[in-house]
Image (cartoon, rainbow, N blue to C red):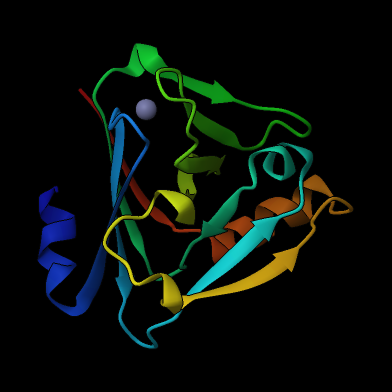
Length: 153
Ligand SMILES: [Zn+2]
């Protein structure tokens, strides 16, 4: 955990997550107002195949740690504006990152969260297939986790 995340830890819920083998780990710091965690079942073709369920918070912070970058595949498709971080060792996709205006935004896969109560998850289904690239990036910059620190060992 870096200093920036640690400094804010006191009044935030710190949620840990990782891929199955632990190559990609993260700490998601979210405001504690309201306990429930909004979960979005992404309707894109990739996430339908994976059963991808994500959460984010525009007030949140994300600290990502990658042990072996050569075991990470950054998969893109369609508009190629988001990178799905696929662990090559275990096949799990714990995070998705979109770079907008030289800034990183992210969502995390709720199936990879560790220290949460599953009954706090509040699920909704969305499908952004018809969106223009411009409105897609605009939406991400408003709803995804805006403070992302990516640490590669
Ligand atoms: Zn893995």
